[in-house]
Structures are given as structure tokens and as C-alpha cells.
Length: 142
Image 1 (cartoon, rainbow, N blue to C red):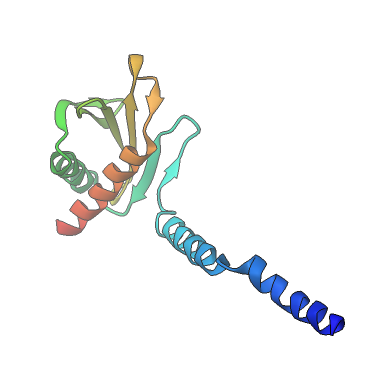
Image 2 (cartoon, rainbow, N blue to C red):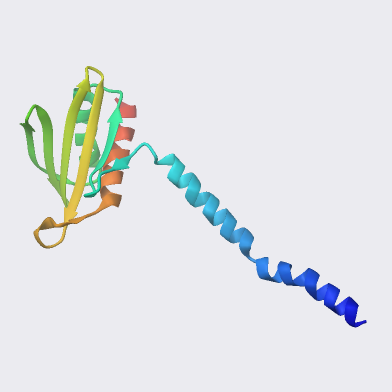
């Protein structure tokens, strides 16, 4: 009888310890899927998001401006620096800087950084990422 209880306990113990792990596995699967979906956006060590598009500078420029507008950001500066397009926009408490670099006639790299805090020393990767994702959506509409 004692042996039967011990056998039953040894069979149930792993089931009890692993109870609820399916939810964790499903959550991890969702996280890994989300990460895989956004691998096209990369980041520098200082929080600048960047991505290369197979599109002309002018198309990426129009798409980036449309993305900023769609997100409710106010364009403060639209200029050229060292042959690159440069935008500065503001949100409620964010300063957005975007730079477009032409790599070839139909290849353009976008860099985006969202700064906040005292003297704009902190970086907001989520907002930088969203700017690039919205630029991608706007490019699809062109």
C-alpha cells in the first residue's frame, strides 16, 4: 500500500510542478514571434533605431514625413546635413531626430531617435521603432 502511494506521488509530482507551464510556453512563443517580426529594425548602442529600405530617398522622405504626421508629431526642422536629409519633430515630451542616408539610387537608410528628459539625454526605443514601422507602412501606400 505504501509502495502504491509512493508510486502515485512520484507520478503526480512532475505534473504538479509543471502545471501552468503551457501558459508560459505560449507566452514565450508569442514573444519570440514578435521579436522575429521586428528583426529588420536594428539599434546602435546609444539607442538610435535604423533600417534600410529598398526605396528612393524621395519616397522614404515622403513616407517619414507622413509617418510623423500620422503620429501627431510637429515638424520643427527639415534640412540637409552633409548631403543627408535631416528632420526634427516634437511630441508632447519627445524630441524626434530622423536622418536619411542614400546608399544607392533605390536604397535608403533611415535613422530615428526619440529623446526625452532633462536635456534630452534619455532615449525612447519604442517610439523610434514605431516611427520606422509607420514609415514602412507609409511606403507601402506610395
